[in-house]
Every structure is written in C-alpha cells, then in structure tokens.
Length: 454
Image (tube, rainbow, N blue to C red; front, side, top):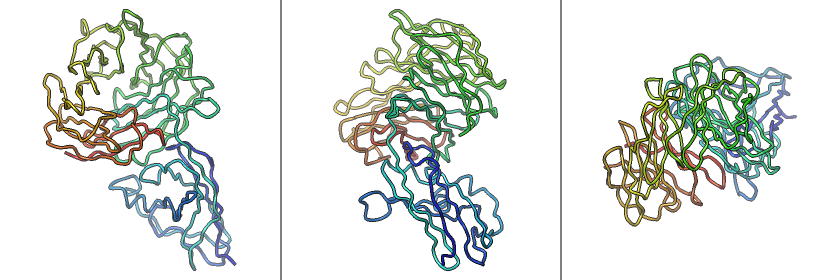
C-alpha cells in the first residue's frame, strides 16, 4: 500500500507565456505514521517536473527550495525559520504553487506533462501526470513604468486571444523579483484596445497600481493590488474619439490618479487631463503640445512634484516640454534635448542613438556626443538609457543582445539565442543600480535580461 498520494491538477491548464500558472496538489497521508512536510524552512516540499513532447528527459524541474537557492536575495530568504511540521496519519493537505514564479524565467510555450513529487518516510512520492499548455503571448500593446518612491516596475500588455477578444495583463515587480514575477489577468475586452498605460507614484504611498486604456472612444481604468483587482472597471463618462492615453499616469497621496490623453491633427497635438478617484472622473485641464506629429509621446513627473515633462521624437531629435498639473505651459515652446543627426536609431527622455552598424553608432547624451565601439553585425533593434549617474546602450545583433556604456571600448553579451528581430526593446532600472533589458519575442512574449554591471 502506498505511504501517501499526491493528486495534481491545474487551476488553469492553458496559460499565456508569463501568466500566473497555479498547480494544485492534494496530499493525503495513507499511513499510520506522521509524514514530514517541512524541516523548518518556510518552503513547500514539492518538486515539479515538466516534460515536453519529444524530449528525452525533463525540460524543467521547479521547486521553492531550488528557486530560493538560485536567488541572491528574496522574500523567502528573509522569512524566519519555522518548526518542522508533519502531515498526521490519514490527514490531507492542499498546496498551491505558482509554477511561473518558481522558474528563473517563465517556461517556454509548449505542451507539458507535469508531475509533483516529495520525499516520504520510505521513498519518493510521485503524482500521476497532469497536462499543462502554455501559448505565446500575442502582444498588440505594451506599456511599462518605474516608480521611484516604491522601487516598483509596472508592466501591462494587451494580448489577443484566438477568439479575437483582448486580455489586459499586468505585472508588478521589484528589482530583486523581476525575473520571478508573473502576469495576472486584469481585464478583458471584446473589441480592440486603442492604447494602454500604467502609472507611477507621485509620493511614497501604499495604494494599488492603476491601469488605463481606451476601448473605442471610451477611457477606462481600474486599480490592482498585485494580483487582486480592487474595484470594477470605471469608464470616463465623456467619449473621446481619436484620443490615446499617454503612459504613464500619476498616482497621488489622496488616492487619485491623473491621466493625460492626446489627439494628433495636422497642426498640433491636443492634450486633455483627467483625474480619477474611486470611480469618479473629473476633467483637470487641457492644452496643446506644440508638435504636430510626435512619435513615442511619453511623460514623467518632475522631482518638484508639480510639473509634467513630456518627451517625444521628431525630425531625428528628442524634444521635451513641461506643463503644470493643471495643463498650463511651463516652457514657452518645445526644446530639443538630444540631436540624432536625422538618423535616430533609438531614444529616451534625455538621450538619442544615431548611426548604423556600417557607419558607426553615436550616443547623444544631452549636449555632447560619444562615439561607440563597432558592432559585429547588422543592428535589428536598439535602446538607450541616460541618467546623471549612468548611460547605457543595448543593441540586437544577430541572435544576441549586446550592451555597452559610452566610453567603454567593447560590447558585452547580455542575452543569446534570440531567434528573430525583437520588438519594443527597452532599457530601465528599478533601483538605480541594476539595469534590465526588456523586449517582445514573437515566439513567447515579454522577455527580460539582467544586464552586466559596469
């Protein structure tokens, strides 16, 4: 007779790449002796083995203990030790484990046969196999923001289901947990989503993270605490045909959030400001940007907490203009902060990258330009980041991501095995010390890589 049994199932047996994927294990002790479940560490005793069709051996082996050992620092390591605990004779216990969180990164799309196992008093206890399928994320829109006060990164993307429905996924992570963070389903739309934005904090506040998007002419928003939606979707009562929401929104200490929406025409770009608090929307201001066709329009809250700084690219240059929170211009007109010499390859709010693999790349950092080392092959994608303390450039060459800081003599490989030109390549830091590259892979979805230090 078996000492114990494990019955394994999945709360959702078909998941999108990077989505929360919860395995449900029901353990029953069939013996007359207690079964050791934990030796004092606050970790699940279960190990999950994923086998893909056609593979000779396991594709992934996941457990909380192995995840903990692979992390330099994390929540579980800071947990106090506990007393050893047992599953008493004839007793049952249920353990839920998010397999996506347990990996170094989400497991790749495919069909998997999954078993759960744990050590018993007289040998290993293994469950019958349960089937799990993960599918690539079909990403139509992507937005990300980093909130300095809480050192959190918020990423949201719009995924198109095979049925044509759109699902809005959201992820909230810190610098130490980014590679183990998962996406949760925040909302669903039967029609196309026109634009999407996440949010940042104006001050250090304990509040959920807001997400906003357009469905047709209607601006919608909801608040999320990590994985839990804390209120219903709230729709702005005023219809706004032709507008797009600018990423990110700004959250304030009084519980409200400010979103800017823009509409381009042949002469200028109109701006409307809306505040939402709870389910109540109010119009907060309006103005014009002073640019007819800005590309990649984004905004940031200045350190004084009173001004919005818009940035965009046009004519091979990077431009900015400041407005108050009531939409009054602080700058009389837009001004250029970086010149891409007409061959803009990538840009951020304070920097530009110009040139090519053949002619050489130049980083334009404010008022000065720095020539970068030659790259070994053609450039499929590029990104640049610039702060007063650091600057960084990343490019995709062939199947590799290469990284270089202006002033260095060579490029370093940050990631390998990229099968196709990536899209939405970006650079960011959550804590001001470690930089990550983010991109969208057609074979899987949103990917991250921790970049080498200087």
